[in-house]
Image 1 (tube, one colour):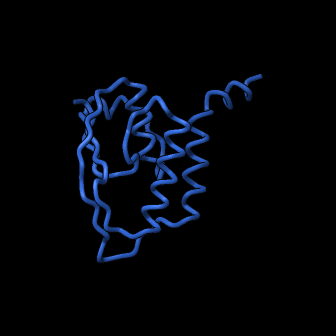
Image 2: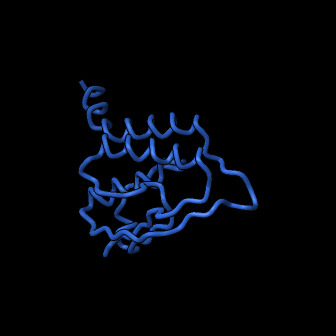
Image 3: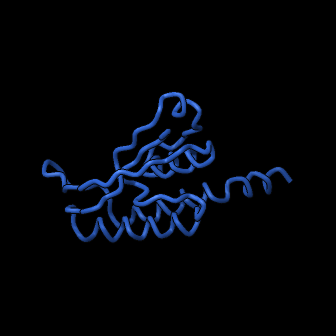
Length: 123
């Protein structure tokens, strides 16, 4: 495998996080049906160094995980999936909330239609 990511088999981080993640994954699947991935934002991800350097990663926010999946698809990497359990952090609250969904959607739409936007701007 060139790239391995986890998917949350069991979640222990609360209903709100589960709902937000479910919505985000559905939107990701609708916009990127060619990428077969469970639980796009699950951690950790393991990638060969040579492929990490080939990725054109620009995100520094919640979109980073999805961007890695998109870049892995562009590079035609062999992606492996590994089930994991996800526990709630006991030392702090989550930074993810329902307003984060809008940030996710904005980034997903931008990634999906970036080439179209660039083409229209050059006209």
